[in-house]
Amino acid sequence: MNNEFEDVRITELAGLSAERLDALPFGVIEFTPDAIVTAYNATESRNAGLSPQRVLGKHFFEEVAPCMNNFMVAQRFDDVDELDEIIPYVLTLRMRPTPVRLRLMKAQSCATRFVLIERSTAN
Image (cartoon, rainbow, N blue to C red; front, side):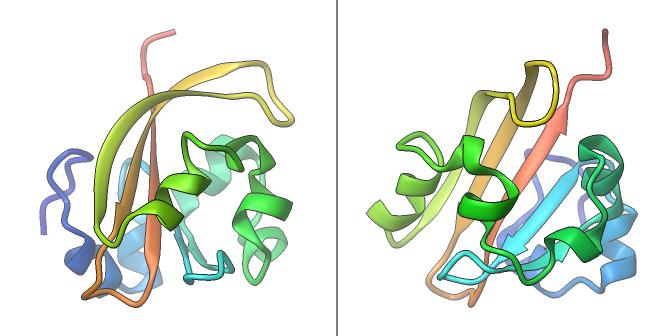
């Protein structure tokens, strides 16, 4: 599997164990079509300061990341059957504004959806 943010495929992500997701160098949030979080990797847990126990089973856009519950992120998952887009974004919830790149992923062949989060390493 490719560990690059731009190159990983949704079918690869969907088949990974929690340990393999944890090893990825970018944040990974997997959720059901009704936005219930089913996977939250160690990279995102460290970067966001939220434990998987606080996130798993919660509604992603209402309880975990309400700053993404808008037309730029949440609505895109509802608008199309297939989605694989990288967008610049600024996270603001419970932190100082943090520029990131989001990768929004949804496929008809996959039962779950993904938001990948790449934070800049340059400060």
